[in-house]
Structure formats: C-alpha cells, structure tokens
Length: 405
Image 1 (tube, one colour):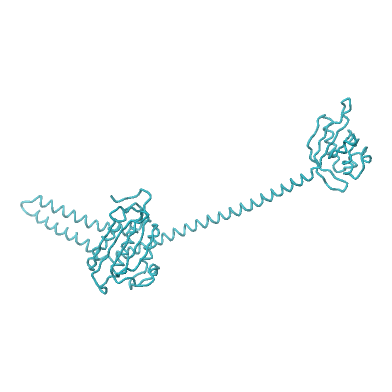
Image 2 (cartoon, helix red, strand yellow):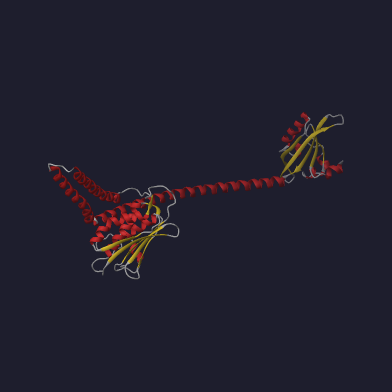
C-alpha cells in the first residue's frame, strides 16, 4: 500500500475526525519538508496553521454527510512558504464495517494551470482595457469627424448661398445692360395696343358698327398685351431669387430662351446670332435659370468683344451637341478679335477683367454654376479668329421635373 501511495503524483492524506493525519504519502510529507513518519499522527493545525480550519470544515462536511466533496480549489503552503494551488477531492474513510472514521484527501498541484489562467485573465483584461480605450478614441474621432462634416456642410451651404447671391447680382447687372432692349420689346406691343385701341374707338363711334372688324381689333389688342406680358414674365423668371432648383429640361430650350433675351440687342449691334442646335433631344437635369444665365453671360461677352474696332461682318454661333456619355455640350463661338490674354484660365479668376465697367465675376460665377450642375466650362481661341467658350452638362438620370414637350 505504501509503494502504491508513493507512486501517485498527488498529495494523499488519511485524516480522522479530529483532523489528525493517520497516513500520508511521500509527496505530501515532502511538501512540508518532513518524512512520512514525522507527518503521521500530527494535526493539520500544526502543519498548516493558516489553512487548517478550512480543511477541517470541509472534512467534517464529508464525514457528516457521507458524500464525497470533489473539485475543491484551495491553497496549500509548502515548507518554503510558497503558496501552491491544489485541486482537492475528499471522500469518506470507512472501516470494514462501513463506519465513517475520517476522510481520504487527494490533492493535485494545479498551480501552473492557475497561473496560466490568471495570466490569460490578465491578458484578457488588458485586451478589454485596450479595446475600451481604442473604442473611446474611435468614438471621439467619429464625433470629431461628424462635427467637422457638419461644419463642412454648413460652410458648403454658405458658399452655395454666396454663389447664389453673386449670381443674382450678375443677373441684375445683365438686365441693367439689357434695359434698352427690354424697353424696345415692351414698347412695341404697347404702341400696337394703343393703335388698335384708337382704331377700335373709331369703329365704335361709327353709326354703323362693324362687329367683325371690332372683334378683330380686340383680338389684336389681346395678342399684343400677351406679348408684353411674356416679356415681363421672362424678365421676372430670369431675376427670380429662389434657392437652386433642378428640373428636367431640354438644354436647347434654355439656349433658345437666352438667345431671345439678347437677340434684339445683337441685331442693333449688327451681329448675326445663329443657333445650331442638335436635332436630338438634349434632356438634362439642371437649374434652368442659372444655366440660362451662363449662356446669356457668354453671349454678352461675345457681343461686347465685337465692337466697331474689330472688322465685320460679325456673328455669334451657339451650338449644342450630344456628348459620348449622353450629356450635352453647349458652344458659344464668335469671330471677334480673340482672347485678351494668353492664359485662358486667368479669365476665370474672380475679379479679373479687361473691361473698364466690369466686376470681373461673370466667367468665375458661370464656371461655378456649371460645376455645381456636374459639368465643366472652358474657353479657347479659334484658329480663324475669335474665341469659343464651351460647357458640358451631364445627362439626366431621373424622370422628374418639368420637361419641354
């Protein structure tokens, strides 16, 4: 039996009800720096004074219940004072008659496993700490980015508002330059209305009223009144100060509208204005008023470039072509004296101008308007003389808004 007990890689004790050691194997005795003979007969209170009370409490539970107590993880102090972790199983120690006289204790040293588990737990805790720290840093970074994004959106909104304000100022200055043309356009139907009204008054004063003739005169008055109203309506639409609003339109209609606003002025200046529009639909999703402003600004620049100092005949051609991606390219070509500078990009700089009475903002604002629509604006000198300014508009992708029939 002694050889068998000594061959087991565990601490083994036989203890009685008074917590005295009746038998121990060599490994258990050596943990105390003693021999088996020196351990047997001694109380655990002598050998393990710090832990004996707990050992005895567990022993009594087993003795009283008659049931084993397994898997107890507890400390054991060696002779060197080192604390070792052991996993202990305690079973009742019975006589041949079945009487319980004590407990048999099997304790396996699990210190390395416990240390490994503790190291693993420390690593886990450190990992959690680092994850929490990193999560906090990421949360702070995300919050900072969100704040920056909100600030950027606000800044972009302010820039858009400023651009809209500048565009509105440019439209006002454009209309200021068109005052004579607008007066002429409105005066024509108003003068016609006066003439027709006088004619109608003469007919009404005749003894024999020609109803058909009078009706014709009233129809003429109505048409001329509508003609004058259309001029005012176009002007009000052009000068509107609304937030940018995109709608599905035909780019050719935008070009036609812009050309109609400056056509009379071009005729009086002796400049032939030609429209060379692509026969295919030119559907784009744009802010029509702002793009109309771009076309009108390019037309006015071309018109102003061809004064009496440049040889005639003078002409401006506005062309629309379909791009390879289904969008539209608008070109405004003149046969004037050409570009006033070698660096074309300089013309698009804010406040740069070669004219005495110009803000130097027209091309700069026009370029920003086109870019806001998703397109690009550029200029180039023609080989045969004059210049061409072109801009692109991307194709429409959503079938909404107001399309021309």
